[in-house]
Image (cartoon, rainbow, N blue to C red; front, side, top):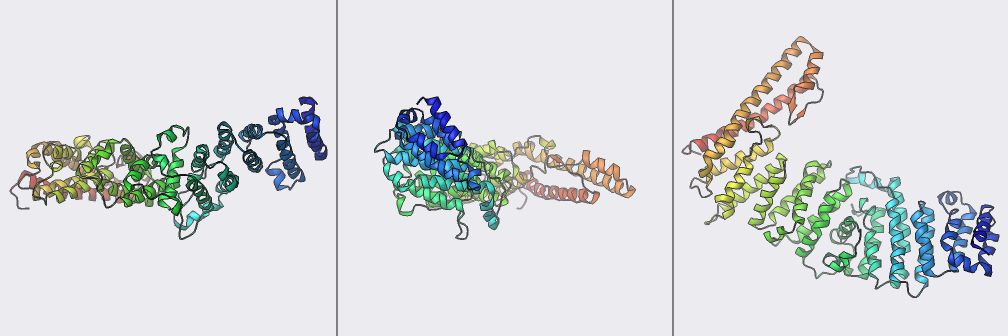
Length: 555
C-alpha cells in the first residue's frame, strides 16, 4: 500500500473513532515498510487525539491511540522512533501528550542494546527542549510561611507536573543503561536550570515543597553517576556544554553544597577554596536575575562557601580572576535595588564577610575598585566604615601597613572625599557617605598626631576640595530648605491650597527626586527631617574643621 493511501485510511479510521480498523491497518504485512519509512508522519496522525482535553473528558479514544502509538513504534527501530518522537515533542505544547511521548521514548531507549551518541542527544535534547515552553512563575517576593503558597500557583503546579513525568522518564533502568554516557549527565544537569531554578527549593521548618522533592531525585541521579564537582574544572566537559544555562549549575551546586543533598554520594576530597573560586561565576550569574528564588539561591550558596573558608585568609591573587569583579558588581545591585529587605540585608552581610575574608591587600583592592564602580552613597559609606575599622586595627601595630599610609592611603582618601559637584552636590543623597568620611577624618585627626598615615600632608588639599565646599553646600542647602518652609507656612496661613499643591509639584526636591503630592504638614515634616540631617553633618563638620585647621586643639 502506498504511503499516501495508508495515511489517508489511518486518519479516516481515527477520525471515525474506528481504532479496530486502525489497528488492522498497522498490523497488515503489506504496510510494514511504509510504517518503518514514514513513522515521523504516522506519529502525529495518532497523537493528535492524545491531549489534555481528552484526558479530562476521559475519552476512551485517548487510551486506544496510546496503544496504537505503541503498536506502530514496535514495528520500527529505536533510532527511527527517536527521530519521529524528537520531531513530535518539538512540536508538542500539551503536557498530557508530552507525558505519553516520554513513555514511548523511554521504551525506545531501553529496548536496543546500544543507542548511538547522536540519537542519545536527540532523545535527551527533546526532553529538555519542552521545558522552554513552560511558563515561569511570577516573582511575588514572598517571605516566611507565605512561601508555602507557591505550591498552589498554577504555573508552579504545571512545572512540577512536567518534572514528575521527566523524573519517571529517567528511571533506574534508563540510568543503568547509559551509565557511562556523558551525554546523559549533561542533559540531567540541564534540568536544574529554567524553570526549576525559579522554584522555592529551600527546606523551611522541615517542610519541603513539591519542587524540592523532585529536585532531590534528580540530584541523586547525577550524584550516583559521576563526581559532581568534576564539572567545575573539566574543560573538555565545559566545551561540550553547548547552550547550557549557567543557572543550571548554580541550582545544582546550591542543592548539593547548601542544602546538602546527596550525602555520602558527594565526594569530600575537594578543597573548600577551590569550590568557592569556581562557583563564584554561577553565583554572579544569579545576581543578574530579578527573581526572588534565584537571588536567594546565589546568596545562600555563597554564604555556605564563605563559611567553609572562615578559618583561612584569602589571597589577593584570587582577585585576578574577573569573576570577582562580576560578583562584586552583582551583589552591589542586590544590596541597593532588591525589593526584599531580608535579601538586601543578607547581601550586605555576605559582602562584608567576603571582603573581610581577604588579606589586607585584597581588601584594599576590593574597596578601592568598588568605590570607582559604585555611586550609591549608602554602600560607599559602609565601605568607608570598614576601611576606618581596618585602619584603626592597623594603627595598633608597631609597623603600619603600607595600605594605610603614603600614596595608597592618599588615593583612598581622595575617593572618600569626592564631592561630584562641589558645593552644588546633593548632600542629602550623599549623606550616608559624608558622615562616615567625616568620622574617618575626625578619628585620624585625633589618633594620628604623629602623622604615620601621612594625613597631615594632605590637609590643604582635602580642605580646599572637600571641607570648604561641604561647608558652603550645607549653608546653601539649609537656606534653600528654610526658604521652602517659610513659603509653606505662608501658604498654609492664607489657605491657598491650589498654590500649595503647585508648589509641591515644582519646587521641592529631596535626594535627587521631586516630592510626591503631599499636604503642607507632610512636606514640612520631610523638610524638617532633612534639616536635621544637615545639622548632623554640620555638627560633625565643625568638629573636624577645628581638629584639622587648628591641629593643636585638644581632642
